[in-house]
Image (cartoon, rainbow, N blue to C red; front, side, top):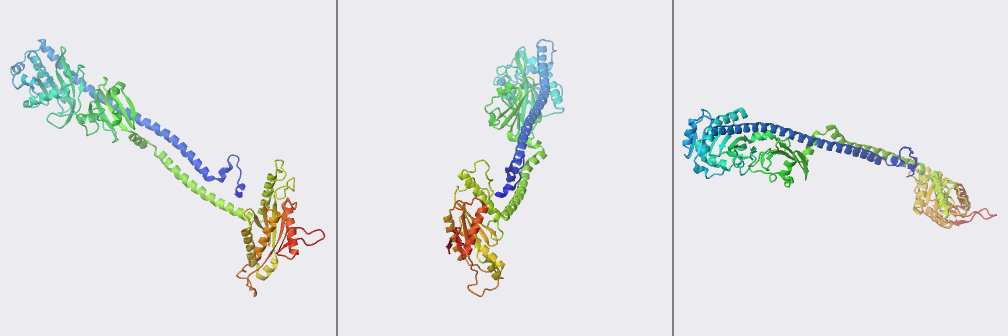
Length: 610
């Protein structure tokens, strides 16, 4: 559009930015949003790292707390074991005094079930006959060691009860036991003696006794069993146990039960529902889980997330503390205890991490991210509406500046600019307007150096015959109707490349590029005939004619000029030539086309008679 030429030319901004402000808004907001996304993504990933570090720190604190508890339990177990070993050693060395209760219990050692007297309030020492023990793994009646084992069990009876009360601060549901491989045991709280056969069978099968036998585990370390059900109950328990050795001979086990709720309190329940914590031993047995649906036979990696099925437990214990990420799942692990016997593990998904990140994300920052697209949309709408308004206003001003308001044809100014553009084009095509500045483009009176060269270029001048009579007889409104009718004839009978214009009053002109004089004359004659055959209805307020069909019949006279043949290379020259021939057509009787000057000595030029 030519109105765009009127836009300012800023030094610091491309001109296209003024022609397409919507693109400027989109690019500007797009860059701002891109920068926000880059900065936001960086902050989110840093926040994600902080979330992971915080989780790892929390797990480390849990492991340290567990280590403190386990250390306390270990010290008690070690104390009881050392005390048992010392008591057996003292009796074997003959230092311990003879105890009648030990002798009475020794005398009934072959009874199916027997028990030894203990001080009031302590749990009894219960034993079984050799016939029962021969059926069970891990038990072997040795009469030579029985008195020493009875002596140690009688002394431990009081110590075990005291140890449980000190551990829980109250009489608890947990159980502490001393189980001798010689076929006797002390449990606190005590169990009825008639339960002894079933209890010995359970000892032989249960992990905290069977798995510390010399042929199964020679490490003599404290062992934590997986979850199991309490004796003759459905309550879930786990047990810490340690073997008793005297002179490199296995003499029994000291065991302490731990309720599952205590382990869950120890490892904690994560805030995120999708996060699970496990406490497991170095063999892969899961001792406790933060889930309430824990089974008694859970193992790593069979009972954890499928993402970790290919990760052996030995690799985790070998690396110590760490964090891993596989298939959208995170795994944080931390050893518990200085010896690395147990491992505290936390498993969670990417979704859990990003939910935690969003919870910690700044609300104003999220608001800005959400507001930017809305602000861009509002700004874009405002700029689009304003720009469309100014474009329409510019186009309207352009039309007003270039067209005749009555007929809608080009005005004299637009006609002159079009002539200048066509002249410049002809100069470029003829090669005479190279680069020496001979005539500026758009100047209607700039001529090329060789005026006789170039493509044909014609012009018509039209004038309505006796137009003053139309105005006088029918009124000026009817005269305007006649002018509009002439404009319509021009539009219907000219090429798209031709430019009709109203130069003023009843005078019209037509610019005809690439048109020879003969073709221009043929077009002019067609126009003349079309005008003659186009009667116009008078204005509603026009006085009645009282004759004919009541319509206005009129004609035009036309003068024709051609730039090359008439040697007219400027607008003024061509207008003067066409106007002179228009005058000659009127002189010859009007309603005619004139395309040549009068011969020498004649006053009337050659016309094309209508």
